[in-house]
Length: 296
Image (cartoon, rainbow, N blue to C red; front, side, top):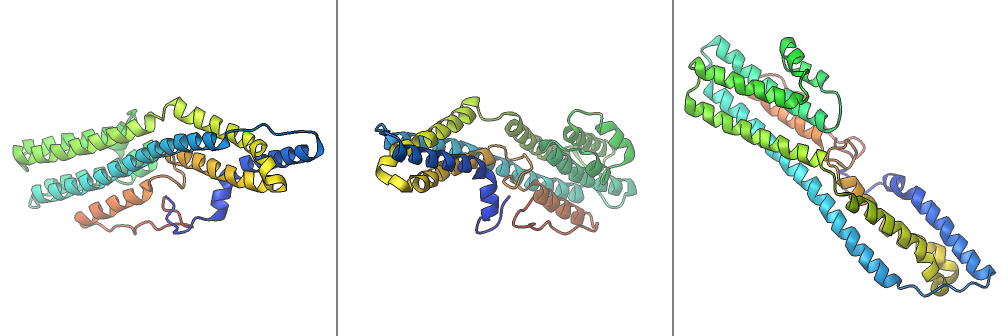
């Protein structure tokens, strides 16, 4: 996620310089043709075209931002649920029994492994390294066989909570409380997977790009009679606005694609890791900081 107050020009130009260069060359070609050949540009209702396209792109960008914001809300819920799970486990399980203390630590560290595994699954990355840092070797071998490693870790926590109830470390009411937190975690994961696996409909991706490029092609033809030699500048600037709006929707449509525009999953997972490790008295790493204006 970009956290700079002001956008960096090189980052902006990296997305639109190619289509913008092609547009400028086309604008120059139309202008030269207009002044060297007996060519009269047909009247085009550019105002009507531009207004309709702006509404279309605005609606698409709104839909894309709603997806991005929903991803952020779901990860906010994951942070809260992880803290609630840690707090309940630390409070409910007794400290007098050594095995109960180890169970407490295991559940908390497994939750840390869970959020890191979920982050990497959403970003289509390998999960093994982060899982190994927090769970035992035997469990690593078992969960890595699962198609959904994060869900496997969550199931292990549910089973260990049931074992704690059977051994009398917690009662059924406390188990129900913990189970509700696990349900909240599973619901948040399901929402994230829905966002990741369900892209915007093809019409939302194909037609805005097609109509924007078509409008940029028609733009100098409709402006050359009124702007004259200034057509390449005026048409290119107008095209830049529409291309930038189009790119905004493309940047926000997948909040978990591991780009500078995404929800900062790494930073949020580190926040969870810090809070949970401190809850069991372990040394915690430092919070992640922005790198060149980007928080990952």
